[in-house]
Image (cartoon, rainbow, N blue to C red; front, side, top):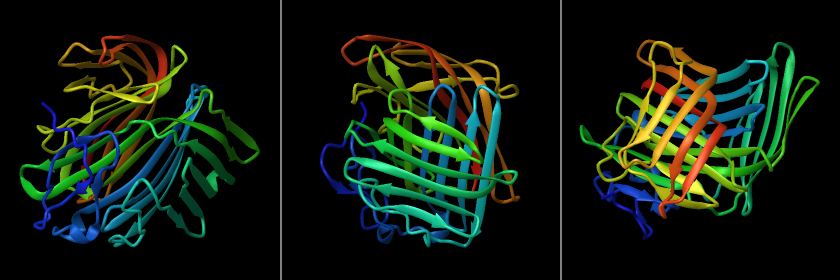
Amino acid sequence: MQNKIVFKQKLLDQGGHLANPGYSLEPLFDYSRKDITASIWRIKEWDYYAVTNSRYAVTFTIADLGYSAMITVVFLDFNNKKIIKKTQLLWLTFGKLNLPSSSLEGNAQFSSKNISVEFIRENKQRIIHANILNFDGNKHLFANLTLKDLKDDSIVIATPWRENLRAFYYNQKINCMPTSGSVLIGDDSFDFNEKDSFAVLDWGRGVWTYKNTWYWSSLSGVVNGKRFGFNLGYGFGDTSNATENILFYDGKAHKLDQVTFDMNNIDVMSDWMFSDNENRLVLTMKPILDRKDDLNFGIIKNLGDQVFGLFSGYAILDDGTKIEIKDMLGFAEKITNHY
């Protein structure tokens, strides 16, 4: 049994502990930094967007990790097997990026001499603007993307850690947002059309323990003329009250229980396999590109692989409908953080 949250409530109790670990299909928890009783060094907050189609992808991150912050934009060209990445690091931010306390309202933004990234929240859409000097050599990047907010089901989880009762992860993933717009890199224009381009939002707030390894996979696309996607993940915290594993079809959620990633840790470009404990999911991912994380400052590390590839297999909805998947673009990652 997984604990499904259906009423609005405070995320933390007066002691700064998760009041009701579980999952919901919309943001029902009230999160506030003022309610946290753990050290500000341990508070981690981020907004991450990934926009993909079969030809290319672009990801945007604004992350305030307490004693550091990262603003990152990555462009991936699947046909030419090319990855371009630009990151600006900040130190001792401790919430100064003022990321919103809710995914439903408020903007996230950062601007400096060389990099500007903005996530704008409107009623029926989300807008991403980015302006990065010398993104690819002397080529500048300009991004202007509009994501439709269709008020779909999403996956929201509130996860504790057994070893630290003041540690928690409050997270929402929104899949299958139709996306239009363009990314310019120098004189090259990369266009996104809402018919075949979709975004996922990873919105995270919490207090993390120092060392964790997580597995995450996400896909958004179209099957049988309907938007289809999934969120799969595990590896951190106490998930006995709820997992984040879920399918999305035509805007509706279909909850999964436990999912396992079977991958080659030495050769991440070999096939990845995914399955669940209820025989509702069997997938294979054939990798195309590996966006490797290799940030290592000794006590601060972000190491791992986010692998983009083609997924094939099947998933079974709550009513028993079998969704056949063939060569759909998505990604899977294994990341270890010391932070």
